[in-house]
Image 1 (spheres, one colour):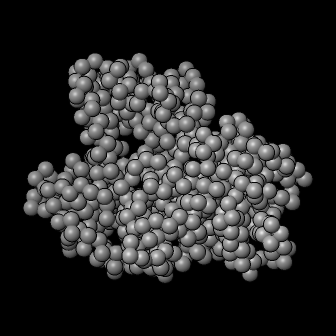
Image 2: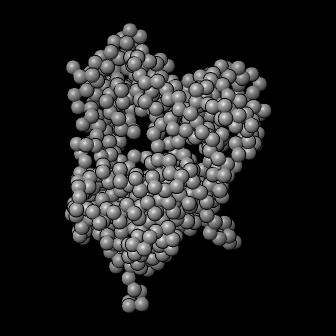
Image 3: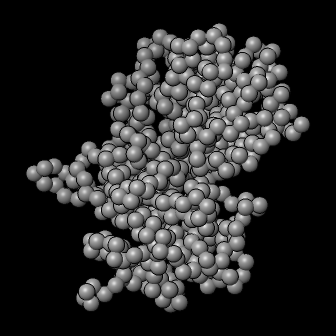
Length: 598
């Protein structure tokens, strides 16, 4: 019996003792985080599956892990022989978790969840669906009884994020937030999302991988703001900083008592999509609850001028690092052994040479040949491919700088590309350009623009399964809302100051993957009698591989866009490069063709 089998057997013993017929174990934490501390990696511990997205469900005789197509291959390998079945989300014959549980359980049986791990909205939806089928949802932390030797929560020191980078002090942000609370007719607001807390108080940390956040809760009231954080994470200097900004501190779990002590005449604002059910239940029932999007979530998404200037500096640093990296790769492929893992380390080294570099903004996705078709591929020692000059490489990477957060994908050919690769790349490029130069009226949602990135592919009955654009933080989370560009409806409109990715792709399983990603920000375009119009301004600075482009398939305005982009890349980066690097970059940024000759 494997270690995973033993853990599963132990969990089932405890379920029987507690009169529980099933339990759900998500891959998240009480803060609805994408990247989580080891202490909360319950789904990974119980199942052995360590993908970033996935939820386990266990009955007394069956168990499954639900994940999406990004992780089908990884899930199949990691779950083999564990007693967990891979449940492929999105396929027609795969039931979602709650319908699956309903099909497996009898009326009157109980499903247990740790209510800290589910948002208010998710918990209520689960409860209602189960109850309508005669099954009871109970809040019971079974994993606390099963996983008794888990790692401790991190106690790393937080650090202050200087206002010279943030643009506004914590005191200023608190004043703006209290104005938002007044508009919502609320007296208090409880925050649990770690990036919201980091942004509001201008604090950062290294409690989880890639996202520079601090494990904490916060409560903002009309005349008081409290940060709930373990004392070991503070120094005398950071305590003094918080006090000077009007912020009190209390132990991490003291948030529960503070919520219970809110008097009944107060109205509490909560974001039901983020706040966990356990915290919600601590708020007195007599208090009015205003369930709406976190004002901080929205405020944080609109970057101020200081933040935007910082991001522009970060893009220059990233562009310089990428120039040196791709120049090295081009000069050394097949001259030395270069693998997906080793090139990721080399790229890290080039970024680390840049001033104010802190670390990667996510794990680098380096997919050579068929691995590029796995959207969130992560090279492991037993899958690590060696690069040769026969196929194309998809490289999705990003850096965290005090100045800002970067995220860029480039697809390059390492040899002579096929006609199919050129055709596919050109269709993706057309989508990238047409979205990048879009002009749209104020009030436009990302879902209304998504077609611009997909039309060239759709015209050829092709598509990609991921979203086209996600928001990005300022020296914060690489994936940030509330804005997005995707087929799914999102009521959030695009507003000046928002940063979002532009990343259409095309993937042929087992052959190669193509994705072109720049970060753009929303800026005013023009005001006419028909209202205010907006457009995107590209922030990312690195050339797109011309060897993969069918120039005759591009419209003239698409050629003009790419030539202008490459000119901007060269003019902006060249002052930071030596003569050899400038020569290399100039060649990559040359115009597609001489228009006067046509």
